[in-house]
Amino acid sequence: MAAPNIETIVSLSKRRGFVFPASDIYGGLGSSWDYGQLGVELANNIKKSWWNWLVYERDDVEGLDSSIIQNRAVWRYSGHESTFSDPLVDCRDCKARLRLDKLETDPADGRPACSNCGSKNLTEARQFNMMLRTTLGAASVEEDESALAYLRPETAQGIFINFKNVLDTSRRKLPFGIAQIGKAFRNEITPGNFIFRTREFEQMEMEYFCRPDDAPKLLQQWVDDFQVWIKSLGISEENLNLYEQQPHELAHYAERTVDIMYRFFPERDDEDKQWDELMGIANRKDFDLKAHSKKPENEEGKRINPDSTDDLSYFDPQTNERFYPYVIEPAIGVNRTLLAVMMDAYTEKTNDKGEVRVILKLKPELAPIKVAVLPLAKNNEGIVTLARKLKRDLQPSMRAVYDDTGGIGKLYARQDEIGTPFCVTVDHESLEDNAVTVRDRDTWEQERIPVEALRKYLSERLG
Ligand code: GAP
Image (cartoon, rainbow, N blue to C red; front, top):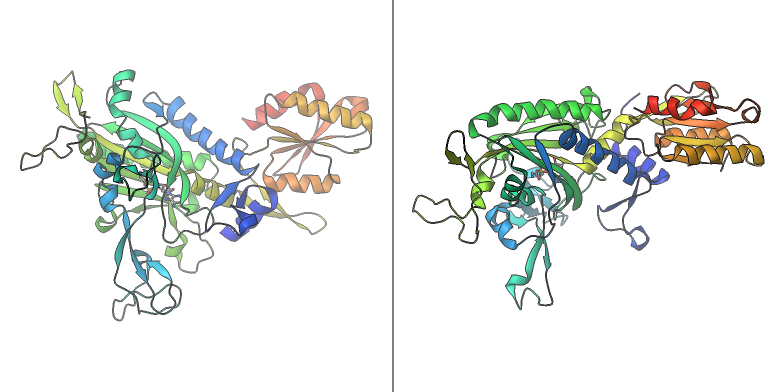
């Protein structure tokens, strides 16, 4: 089966309750999305998998949850106030506002062309800062400039400014990491492609602090390890690719960045354009810890940061050295991961009546609902009572639902489409033999299981 395009996932998401357009009843809000009853479960399961794998199953990573709004100085010294911008141009013919670095250039004359109408009649580029602004307190920014604050454009800076807090209180030694999951905000000029690029999104970031000499080797190690984790979510290898960022593409802080790319646009004819970034793994060197420290001086002997009150260097008691650790940063978006997981899990199968059915083959660990309990006859009190009891008994150990709102074929189809690994059907015979039918989502095979063995049977298969 051909890979689905993003539109197929948009339609499934809206139809079944994964993702809805935000503010829909007021005409929407460009590229904003709300996560529905299934989307929130899938996103939570992805975040749980990341946190378990990184924080609980390793010995060298601590967790953190820092504020979205920080002192404005954080963004001044991180470089975001001066450099976190995209080059913006306007098309004089169709009036589209465009990111210059995303436009195709005409090979004949090297001039960029409007992606909307093809015109080369574009304005001069100007830099547009992407941080979303807000004000704190009752004064406006015009009345009091210090009222200006930003919504964080990355979760990373909250980790850097807490480096010493975590180091001192956890008594960690290098190398170690600090992991954080949280919302980030960017005033993207050209958001779009569903949840791929939005102005409000969620990141899962880890800053891994190490000795400078170890950084190149560790970057490679994290590139390898993250591919293993991504594949553990059910994303297939053939839809993953590595991209080495070129010197002109590197962020101001990065020495080297490797992007893990996913085939988000399989419908595009040009193979190169089928891929886009799922995550980036960067060597940020000691840029951020130095930038936020009161200590370092530039060549003229001036303090780089006169506002910081602390020094974020590290003292190694074994070598008696004091230095600024280097940082390897694997950064991945929750929303892009959810999109890739749904695209990879999407399959279609034809039943014996010749009807095409959608099956979302999610890994059981990620499935929003693990089991659906379905009564074969909703007017039979004995069947309904047993089905409801089974659902209640399973609920504490796995997410279970009860559904009697249609014929059994329709109920199976609905659960297949939302990725529920197992359906349990209670029928007339169940009242006699105290057994139920368990149906597998992927094979559609059915097995008769005694009620008392049901929880164990399901738990073993859900992992
Ligand atoms: N701290 C480094 C950093 O923020 P980034 O490449 O700008 O690096 C990391 O962002 C990840 O966050 C991306 O690989 C992507 O998965 C996600 N991401 C970034 N901008 C996004 C946006 N506007 N919408 C959705 N996800 C986004």
